[in-house]
Image (cartoon, rainbow, N blue to C red; front, side, top):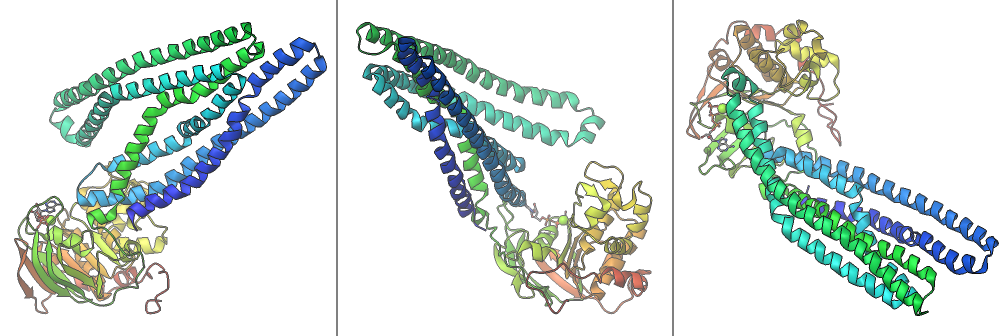
Length: 584
Ligand SMILES: Nc1ncnc2c1ncn2[C@@H]1O[C@H](COP(=O)(O)OP(=O)(O)OP(=O)(O)O)[C@@H](O)[C@H]1O
Ligand SMILES: [Mg+2]
């Protein structure tokens, strides 16, 4: 997928809707002439001649035109709302993907992009665009005034110019304080938001006063800038409103002078006044709506940067590949983490065959977690390669790759959802598959004690599950769907002896099923289950020990030979576009 072309495509599709809106705007604006024309006609034809029949027909025609006007106006509003919804959906998907990429890169404000999408939606669905299109029709009104008498047009054109000047002055005067207010508001929201996620620490160590002080300081800055902007724009807005009044008076005065000199009919005096109002309306709307345009443009610019995947080396293939059957081959892998200056991995090479368990050990900051993340293709290698069954893991289409991979990161975090949804990776699931994998990972007994069983909501904020229990649910999530590659990053840090046994059982079941298993661990039970142990030291492979056919821990493999473990791994993989006869 390609960022700029995505935005360009969306833009092109939007243009069609906007053209339609413009096409509607022309008759809508012309129909605004109904009441002034009606008035002119009353003055010039009915009042003069006293013909009530003319009055009747004029009224019928005017009412009909008003009805058409209302209908067209409604259609245009709906069109913009529909356009806004469409844009929201279309851009929302892209933005969510971009947010995930942004988090992986370790940069940016993740919630910002979705806000930008919402702002663009509001902009497209709102009045800003129709007003601007009306702006293009203003000359028509000026032409109508010109037909009544050139003097009317001259006065209105002068007024329009004045209002444009005011718009520019407004922008110049408020641009800086508004930008500063927005920036500091953004800073305070993200700073305080991050602090509040630490509610336990704040409350437990009595840090509330310090948090309040921080918030107040940031908030004051925002208020100061916002006040300044509001003060300036209030002055300008008061001025521009009065100028409009003065202009209407000028038109009336012009009309009176023209009528007195018999250069125009009395009806034109009122008609011109109303039409001048229409002609200047878009200028007023431009002044009022300018901020929305600037905001929408800023949102678009920000989205443009996050939607350019080639900037972060995140392009991927979109073609699903069949289930991997070959080995995992890591060759001279070098990786400099985003934002870091020195490599976390320096030329790592090893191979893991299907049906093999590789344990990775090493002291803190040796690069174990970095390696684990690279194995599931989160980041693109700086140099070297990681291939699974001959295919680059990073370039692999995510959806099909994910269905062959189980990954348990070091810091397990569960999704906002039920136990079942968490295990089944938020996909629709067969309860039997969920229960099987839960039994294998020792989650089934835990779930039995939960109030709603598998349908119990467990999320980030929930205290229902302990750290060790969460780790086991994370393990079940990794094991779900019969992964061909299983990567576990310190899956046993919070596990008790029972949990450790479940982990070993799960690893050996995956091995027996022919999966490639890579586990970062320091615990003896898991090490005993490994075929080889890779010792990582300062981003380099120190040595790889092959372990003999030694007896694995306690009752780990004994349980594997039972039906349960095997059954848990026999669920067919999710259907793949194009099909995979070997796995069918
Ligand atoms: N996103 C990142 N940005 C900057 N530096 C990073 C990033 N990820 C990892 N590093 C650096 O890479 C090095 C290896 O980190 P890694 O998390 O892989 O260590 P580890 O072996 O898993 O340690 P531990 O046993 O404590 O989990 C560290 O020096 C770390 O600071
Ligand atoms: Mg780690």
